[in-house]
Image (cartoon, rainbow, N blue to C red; front, side, top):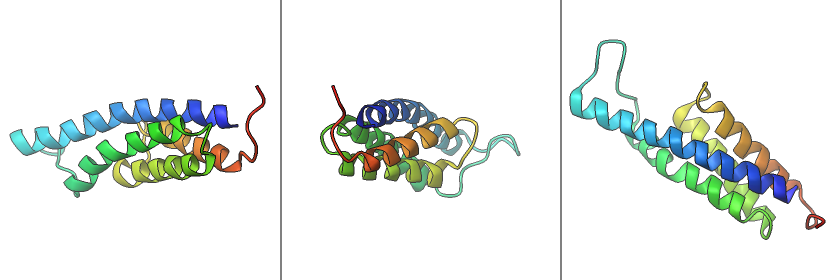
Length: 118
């Protein structure tokens, strides 16, 4: 279960990096060039989106990286990452996989009671 948490956390973090990069870039673009009618409007909480774009993927990667040695801390980081992505970006077509992977990885890391067999 720790290996699965490691894999899910790292994959969720990498996908979260891509989502975060474009989310942060979107807020900068709208701030710089303005809104485009109903097609492109600024988000309600710019600081939340920008902060989560940086922090949530890092939490997922860090949680995945420590899943084998520190499963409880890894589980907390992975669940915090999933919650942060859900809160800042919402659940949609581009965020469903990193949120689900980080959440499942967090649950698996918390449930891992003993080291994985080699």
